[in-house]
Image 1 (cartoon, one colour):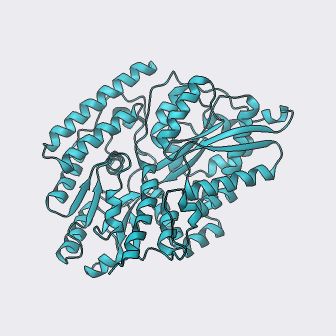
Image 2 (cartoon, rainbow, N blue to C red):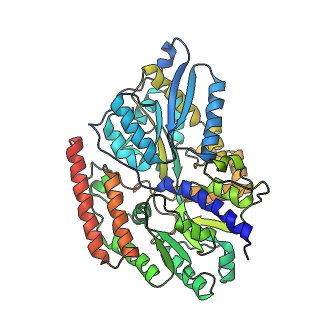
Image 3 (cartoon, one colour):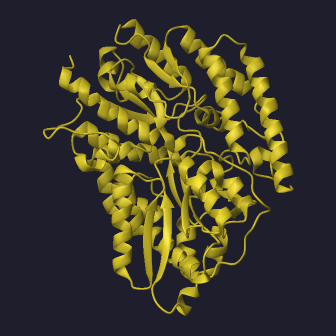
Length: 488
């Protein structure tokens, strides 16, 4: 039985989940001007009179922020041509994008900005960046890095077959489950559910054993719907899910969407799952895991290192203090036996998309500043730095040489967070490069209407197909308006 002290510490786990769950959440997209582009002045640093200072923006906080700050300091100390000033812009991708839009209007863009995966199309159309493809083509020294990138990262962040960002900070999704609950119900904790049908079967077993009343916590967030549909090659929009051209119509209304909604509606109706609204900042589904009220939840892999550290008691108290969490001096872990498994798919495990963010090199500033930003990203994308980011930060490695490094392999073998990240990486490899997910201009509206329809299916009494049809019409209307805005 959990004592009062442990119950209080469970809020620590909740706080960690809450911050990182937003990594796969919806972005605040907006329209843009006709697509920009241009050359990448990779050699312009040679013309600088002295050190070139650049600003770098992201939403990093807690462990990722501490790690990135340390890496920026390492880079600054390693050479004398560039000075990187890291300027965090809040704790969400939405905050960064809002400030990015204002900076673009004022002509004061940073040299580099980390923006959410949902913004790929709108950033490509905005005329505010130099496409990553141009920089890799212009710099022979970067050819090895470009060839070393994981194919799924390049496929996901390309528009018209042209890579848009210069770097990545990617995550995937996992099923988090309570191994103690599995054991109490007679389930094998080494064998998590691999499909949604198995998830239901496990939930029935756990409920029948009296371990938890509603074994699954599900949150009605759009990104999960998108990933389940991508996993069975079901497009959300036309033009081959926006990959063959600018999407102008929805393909959301489908047998697969209905199948997904009916599955989760049945789980809730039969008392096997508790559904929570998908509003921004929702944490109740995570809290149910922390308090042993639920046994399974599907969520992002973004917080794996922090969550594992909290479970083990190895996390730095000063780091999580940035999340508004105060650990007691004698903190030794949460006492929960959690583990992770691949994202359970409609038909098979580990099928979906990648989420997280991408680093964009803006066309603001001077050629020297653009070249300085490029130099920093080449350094960040190199093998030692990708190993450091994967072991100490929050993202998954995106170059094969980092994955093959003995240091990363040792981390993945030894620590709890490392073992979980290995599972997350294996999920990443399973994503289909020929069907990496949608490119949508007005992704904000698309996610809003999907969330609303999903919430009605899980929490309301409305007809599932009628709600899907309404969402389908709204997605088409948003796509048509976006096309008119960008002049497509």
